[in-house]
Each structure stands twice: as structure tokens, then as C-alpha cells.
Image (cartoon, rainbow, N blue to C red; front, side, top):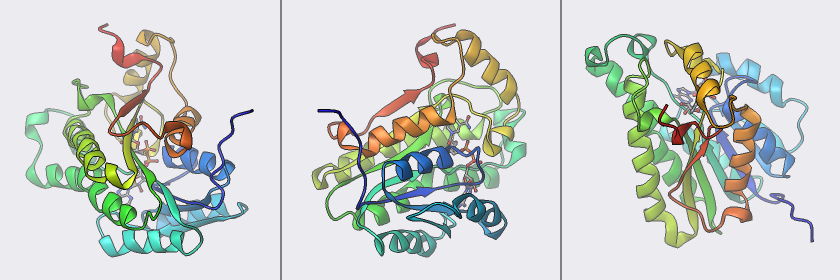
Length: 257
Ligand SMILES: NC(=O)c1ccc[n+]([C@@H]2O[C@H](COP(=O)([O-])OP(=O)(O)OC[C@H]3O[C@@H](n4cnc5c(N)ncnc54)[C@H](O)[C@@H]3O)[C@@H](O)[C@H]2O)c1
């Protein structure tokens, strides 16, 4: 029997589409191709113009505004999804830090910038997971996006390394909390990809080149490869996997040089 992934009759919500380069967008497209009833979110009206244009010709798809720091707006996004089909998959693809905090000395990070990065990039997974899990009537899969800087020092990544370390720990605690409800929580640790968020990191181009030069596969990854891994995590092919950090990085993380 040929293996195929069919998410029809199920809702998937993907948080954090800014434009066609967004990792969220690659994930959303894969979920849509698998037949899911798709809800994507954008942060504000300005980004909405681009995102509404992206989805305009897609069937079974809606785009809604959502600020992940506003619980009512997270709940409204989930309610918009569940009004169409039961919720089965959630992808949290959201992060932010002030540009000034993504360059220079890490020790110079101010408390406001520290809090902002942690709130948006780490804390926000909690309401997303809780409000999503509340609406998952028959188990489900929740995933977030992380980066190797959670573990190793990437000069320039600064406060976002702290946020990703916190996020990865949250994944484990949430996986433990929700496991008996058959709700899985995982993270994809993606290699560097040229997106709006990545462009804010000083030295990003060098980071991408170093990954390509030193990874076992001697290349960078693509957004589509992250989308494929996300579909796997949303699918019945991964029902035994929770609390995992899945590296989609052409193997870079195993190398010492
Ligand atoms: N690009 C990379 O190299 C890379 C590598 C590993 C992990 N990631 C992670 O992938 C995720 C997606 O980032 P991306 O690279 O696709 O960039 P992106 O800029 O396309 O996506 C980031 C999204 O976060 C949204 N966002 C920020 N603050 C928000 C808020 N308060 N409410 C709602 N949305 C908010 C932005 O609007 C944007 O849509 C992030 O968690 C990022 O850290 C990126």
C-alpha cells in the first residue's frame, strides 16, 4: 500500500506568516496540499495585505489577524479554525527581538528588549499551546520553530539564543503536560533561511555560508524542507514522537567544525 498523508476534515492553524519567504508559509502550503482546512495568521493589518493576497486563490483557506501576545486574538484565531473543522495541527512560527539586541555585546541587552524578545519568541508558545490544546478534541500535534543558537553561541543571535533555549524547554514541559491527551508537542530546529526575521540578525549572511560550508550535506536547507518536516510532525507518521527537537539543518548541528 502506498503511504500518503491526508489531513482532510481537520483544521491546521499556522501562526506567523509575513510573506512568501516565511517558514510559516512553507508549512501552511504543505498542510494545504495534504487537504487540511487551513488557517494562517498575520501579525497586523500591514502584513495582512501581503498575506491575504497569498491565500486569495487557495480553497479551504483563511487568513486572520493575530497578535500572539493578545490571548483573545489567539483564541479568536483558533475559533475561526474550529468553526470549519476540528483542530488537529498547530504551528507556532513567531519570533521577534529589537534589531539593536541582535548585534553587539550580549551583556548590553537592556531589560525591555530582553522581555520583549522573551515574551514574543518564548512565552507566546504557552497561550498558543494551551488554547490550541483546549480545542483539540481527538489529540493533535503542536510544533514550534527553534534554532541551534539555543545550544551553541552564535555571535549576533544574542537574546534570541536565550529565547530559543527557553522555547525548547517549554516544548518538553508542554509535551509532558499534554501527552496523556494524545497531544504531541515538538520543535523543528531549522538551519538559517533568508526570511524577514533572519535579516534582522547581524552576520546572518556569514552564518548561512558557514552552515553551507561545514554541514555534512555541504548546503543550506530550504523552506520547503521545513514544510515537509512539519507535515511529518502533523501526520500519523509521527504518532510516537513528542518533546523532540527535530533538526532540519543538513546535519550542521552534529559537526564540531
Ligand atoms: N529564518 C531562519 O533562519 C530561522 C531558523 C530557525 C528558526 N527560525 C524561526 O522560525 C520562525 C519563523 O521565522 P521566519 O524566519 O519564517 O521569519 P518571518 O519574519 O517570516 O516570521 C516571523 C513571524 O513572527 C511574526 N510575529 C512577530 N511578533 C508577533 C506577534 N506579537 N504576534 C504575532 N506574530 C508575530 C511576524 O509577523 C512574522 O510573521 C521564528 O520562530 C524564527 O525564530 C528561523
